[in-house]
Amino acid sequence: MYPSTEAFKGCFALPGALRADLRKRMMFLLQRRPLFLAVGGVIVYLVFFLSYRTSSLSRRIPALGLVGPKKEEKGKEPAVDVQGAGVQGVGVQGVGVQGADVQDVFNATLGFEKIFVINLPARTDHRDAMLLTALSGGIELDWIDGIRGEDVHEKAIPPPPERPDMLVGGIGCWRAHMNALAKIVQLNISTALIMEDDADWDVRIKSQLRDFALSAHALIQPLASNPNTYADPTYPSPTGKPAMPPDMYFDRLPPTVPPVSSPYGDGWDILWLGHCGVNLPTINSKNAAERSRRHAKGRVVHLHDETVPEKKYLDLFREFEDPLDTYPPHSRIVHHPIGSVCSLAYAVTQASARRMLYEMGVKSFSSALDLMLTEYCDGANGRDYHTCLTVQPQLFNHHRPVGKLSSESDISNHGDSYRDKAETAFIRWSARINLDRYFSGQEGYDDQFPDS
Image 1: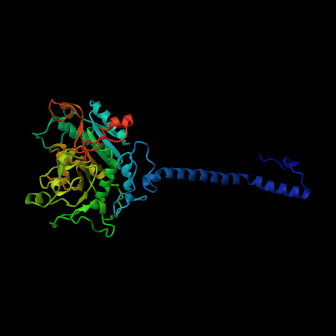
Image 2: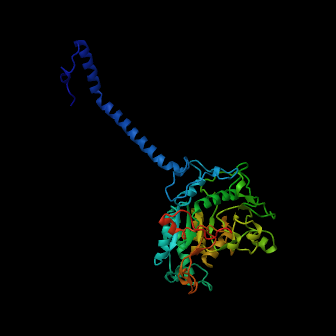
Image 3: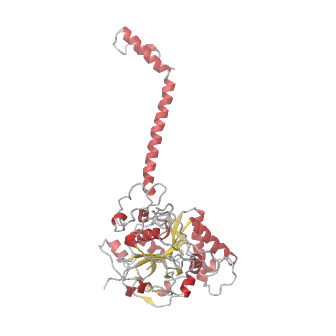
């Protein structure tokens, strides 16, 4: 019930006419109180709603690439301004709501939506070491349980029925990787890096991946000057183009159309970042030309890469061409792979995870997992060709800790000898080997392969 006009008597020492006019105005406002309350409620709601949206957007803006990266926390590698890194004609690509910022490779998942590590639950030593190594570099991991081959039911294995060279451990390895792909498909993850639990990397991995991403742009993104063409004339279709394209050099990459789906570019199926060896597609012999006929042959060469050891420390595949003869010391090459071996670290997209799960988990389990990945990339053994990229020397490699060699693998027998010194081939500032320095707060890094 509204108060009467009598309630206002004596409130104001005003002349009678003015007091009557004020009483009239107050009654006008009181009679319309519900309307004013409703309007006020709407205004309050709008203020809170807009405040929430602004707060939400401010949290999302860094991920969308609308602002620069946050100041890195202590112990994390700082983001580097690509335009100030000596890369001519490149710049930070893909900035914008619809774009993929190359600086995202400096985030906790290295520019992918997730990083999955496959680990047998019984190998707590591998899990602990991997967890601490990732922690030292500000990297976040998710885990996929490894599978023992004897625990895979024979009825669950796709055809063909005979695999005479397959080790029991290889069957478990295959199933664990299929489980990783199934998880990516089930959760609709856009991109993911899959690693095995003995992987190691350089403490500068984020800068290395930034360079790899920019190199990938040059190989698979359309040219900015003409979006209907590519810097590599043999991509995406090398058919009818027998000549080798000239090498592209990292310090003068051509400007390309900014990627939309990933900081590593659009349209790729596998980024094979950790392996035991890979060949360069080439046409320098009849056999090489035949094997490479479906592969794009563009290459990006990063000269004077201080993270690459001297040649005397390297042992690269040379079936078609020896990179150590072709390129000067401290060179790293990004290219399309042929004949890759080992499934240590590779990235997939949602689309490629679905295809791979069907190809290798349902349709045909024809050989060891890494060989099936090679078939998938090369278009061999009845499989279609897909767009894969790799790098050599590789960015991830197997770590070999101090201890019995028999403990290094759960798939194959490495012998009964004892390793007195930990090592990771081709990785100069090994993240694992530098854990002592990290946890003791020491400055600098142990270099496994110092220059002469």
